[in-house]
Amino acid sequence: MARILITGGAGFIGSHLCDYLINKGHDIICVDNLFSGSKNNIRHLLSHPYFEFIRHDIIHPLFIEVDQVYHLACPASPIHYQYNPIKTIKTNVIGTINMLGLAKRVKARILLASTSEIYGNPKVHPQPETYWGNVNPIGPRGVYDEAKRFAEAMTMAYHRYHGLDTRIVRIFNTFGPRMRENDGRAISNFIVQALKEKPLTVYGDGSQTRSFCYIDDMVSGIIKLLFKESDKTFEERTNKANFLYKNKEVRNTNFIHDPINLGNPHELSILDIAHMVLKLTGSQNRIEFRPLPADDPRVRRPDISKAKELLQWEPKVNIEEALKRTIQYFRKKFGIETSRS
Ligand SMILES: NC(=O)c1ccc[n+]([C@@H]2O[C@H](COP(=O)([O-])OP(=O)(O)OC[C@H]3O[C@@H](n4cnc5c(N)ncnc54)[C@H](O)[C@@H]3O)[C@@H](O)[C@H]2O)c1
Image (cartoon, rainbow, N blue to C red):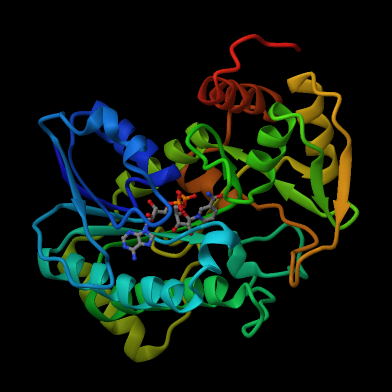
């Protein structure tokens, strides 16, 4: 049994990680300021003897003893991360430094939840981990994209300089139950609009592509990455890291501490997704086109060769099945029990 800290544990992905890890018998400390998360996501865990919720903002230091840290705290949807752009940067910069400091102090393994947004509007397609990205640092999305790039840089610095046992996961679009109905993400938007008999809003002409991963697949990938042992002890890593740092050596890109893409490589246009949601909900609603927001990426598809090789991981749930499960979740939430499809 490990003592595990999950920052952002009351959010969409974090709460699913809490469920999975508590079911495996671990001791979970969930830290969240409930900005974009909700107690409803973890309500069923609150009375569990091995689950502890701490309402805390990670831009303030935290002193607890744990074996592993899953650092996910950060609003993920543009509506939330642009609501207070300075706070978004502080969460990723100060919050990440605080979590890395905590992990260093107690010698815990730490996983940073990074994002495919660090690739920006990519000029390489699909995106391998070795691609450095095409981000507009001063655009409206920069507060999230650049802050996550900083968080990656800081995590690698702690790994190289202090030998910290780090993991970085670059999460591509993920969806499923517990997404918020009003956070503006494409799939939840479409499902909520279809179920509420409203037109489905597509930004631009809908030809921009995304690759959507179901939450269960994402959780299994994140767990595999965190539990994958480093092939070195803490002292060996520190010596090796200091050596590499001093000699500015380029390392093997298949290193477990370098970033790893997790996502579903099945690429679809946003318009295709809208049509699938209409079909699966049985909705007769129309599609309404709106102007594309600034810096919206044209294409997005992960190259997951590294995850396949290092973690023997690839997504298993296909998009149709994943959409059905998510639609079912929203039907239940809105009290719409009968399926029309
Ligand atoms: N969902 C995706 O498709 C996706 C894609 C790429 C990356 N990610 C990353 O995964 C992580 C989780 O995303 P999610 O979709 O679950 O988002 P979410 O908004 O549902 O969860 C984030 C959680 O962090 C909490 N939080 C935010 N700022 C905090 C702070 N300063 N202190 C403490 N808690 C704070 C929120 O209240 C929320 O519960 C984020 O780091 C996000 O950047 C998600």
